[in-house]
Length: 145
Image 1: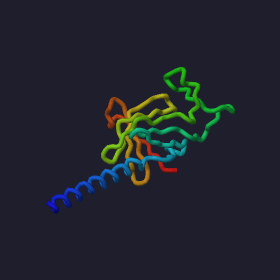
Image 2: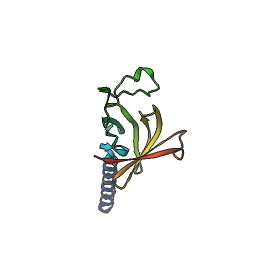
Image 3: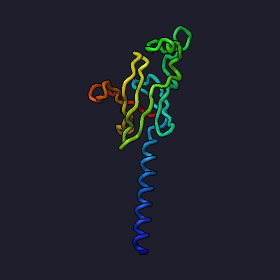
């Protein structure tokens, strides 16, 4: 009986350790990231087990002395909001070493794409795609700030 308790306790401990390690891996995406060509910095945060990202800096943040606006947004009322502060990553969920099920918005063309992300060494590869098919898309690589 004592042996069964020890084995049960050992298995329970291993499960807790594995869960803890998985949670740490999931949060590895958190922080500030330079986008491709260092055009901007996106800060990725977590809320309710989903990950979102907001632009906190862009290289050319001013146009004619005024903050650059989201002029390509398909929603007319949003075309007057500044690009800095814009949330471009939404609803990413961690599953088996990658973040899936989210969306990414491109303020350069006003389009939103399905998105998944995974580490490529120390960099973060984000794949934006259409029609729910990752094959129909492109990957951008971000590096940690």
